[in-house]
Length: 170
Image (cartoon, rainbow, N blue to C red; front, top):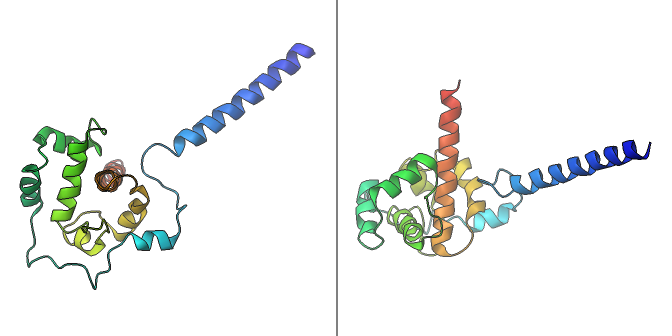
């Protein structure tokens, strides 16, 4: 009887630890799918459309932004393609690509100099897919200015890739 009790107790403890580990790791991987931040925090991260600097008619194309930013933060085309194909850079500790993303988003007018997100500019160039995606990815903007830009971009691209894959599976 004692051996059976020990086995049952071990299984229950093991299951509880596995559940705790899954919940802990689930909150760390990928984009945040839970809305744990207040609406006030999110709205403070958005640029005021009435006061944001307007881009010239036609604006800057994504390729022009890549060319401009590559003059300061040089990254290889393969590295940029990796971000677009997988949702992340191969080495997320290298600051140059992260700062390249900040430059890119600022050149397109999606990020302001004070790191506010200009949602309208993003949607105008087809970035983010939807207003909801951009809103939800605001939660990812933590760290240095370069990290904030990269984490925002990573979240938006990852969501787009997941959405595209789910459409392909239908």
